[in-house]
Image (cartoon, rainbow, N blue to C red; front, side):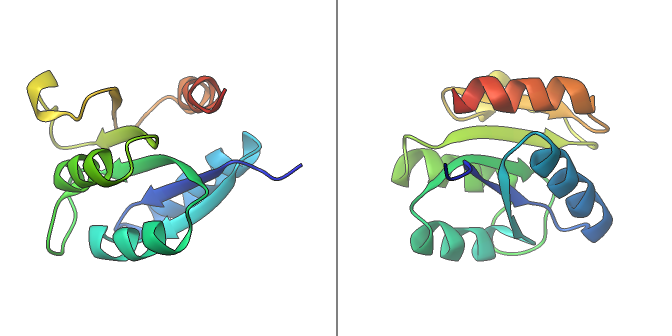
Length: 119
């Protein structure tokens, strides 16, 4: 049985490593991107991605909220989790059917949420 693929978009290498560990420990396959531009390229090449987990604050052409909106428009089946340690977006800023977690997030709660999203 193939593992469900989750794309992690995080510009801080240490935080991205921790997210990869969390996702792999929960039984998923983690795919990494350091910014939204890299994430879009990966999404175009890997159609099996089921969940996007993105930080809001990132360098590059778009932040995590813009990336989440682009993913919602281009790949509507992909579930979206937005995270940030610096800001808390309004519900109106979030794409439809997405979730927000403040950093540092509760690892157990994040794992449970991803498992439910993947079901």
